[in-house]
Length: 117
Image: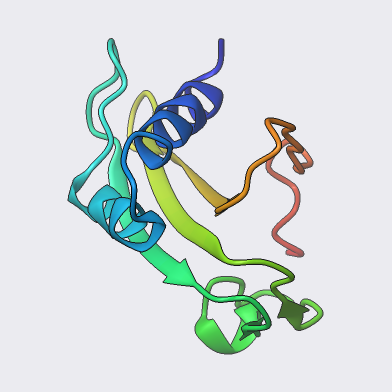
């Protein structure tokens, strides 16, 4: 399995482990452990309420292109992670985990070319 998927599995197990969704979400900011992988860094773990809007260009999370402004349809836990790779590289991943998860998973990516550069 790939490291980002293993980290996502770890996140979903933590988020479903206790009663209060907001506190479970915010507890992820203290870190995520995936057996066999070191150096995973949690950059952000934030509880986001339904109908919140995101402008990722204004946030600075995607400064190379203006993405459409996104409105969150349900309460989520927004988690941003960095994974070290060999050498000086790293992989950045952001997961939006809904409070009422239906066990389905959708991954979006273009093999590193999604940065609009």
